[in-house]
Amino acid sequence: MIAVSEIFSSIQGEGTWTGTPAVFVRLAGCNLSCDFCDTDYSLKRMMTVAQIVDAVRSAGAECPMVVLTGGEPLAQSESAALIDALREDGRRVHVESNGTIFASLPDDVWLCISPKERVNPTMAARADEAKLVVDERVPEEHLPLFAALPTILLQPEGNKPGNVALALDYLRAHPARFRLSLQTHKFIGVP
Ligand code: SF4
Image (cartoon, rainbow, N blue to C red; front, side, top):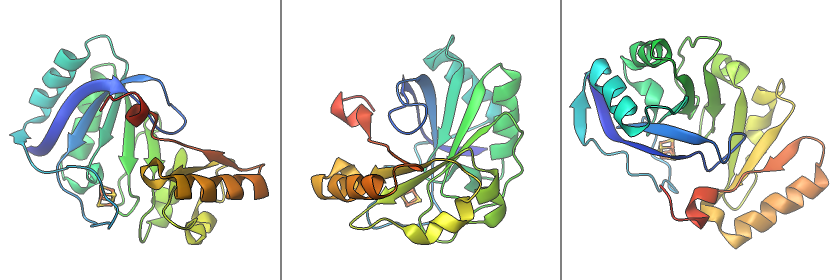
C-alpha cells in the first residue's frame, strides 16, 4: 500500500516543463522537515498501485505526463512499482525528489532534484533537472554535485520579492548556466 496525500490534474508550474498539463500524485510523508516547507503532504488515504493508476486515469485520461511528488515520493517502498505501473499505462513519469534517497529509475523517467540538505551523489548524477530553492541565499554548496547538468534552475522561495531579487542578481552574474524558475501556478490560482 502507498500513502497518498492527493491526486489531481493541473499544469506543471515550475521548472523545465512549466506550462505542461500533468496529473500530480502527491505521496504522503517526507524524510526531511524544511523550515520553509509550504506543502501539505499529510496522509489522506492508503491506496494500492492499481488504485492509484485508476485514479490517474480518472483525473486525466488523455494526459501523458504524471508527476510523482510529495513530500518525498521515493521514501515509500512501493514507489518503484508505482512508477512501473504508470509507465505500463502509457504515462511519461516525472519524479520530484529532494535527492536524499537512492532509487534505481528507468531511463525514461524525468528526475527533478530540489536539494535541501544532504544529497545522494548517485541521484544527483542521475538528475535531469536541478532546482535550487533561493531562500535568503543561493545554496551554492549543492552545485558541485550537479556539475554534469548544463543548466541549473534557481527558484525563489515563495516567489518572495527579496528571494527573486537575489536569484536575478545571481543570474546576471552567471548568465551561461542558470535560469529562473517561478512557481507560476500560484500566479493563476491553480494547485
Ligand atoms: S524536502 Fe520538500 S516536501 Fe520535504 S519538508 Fe522539505 S520542502 Fe517539504
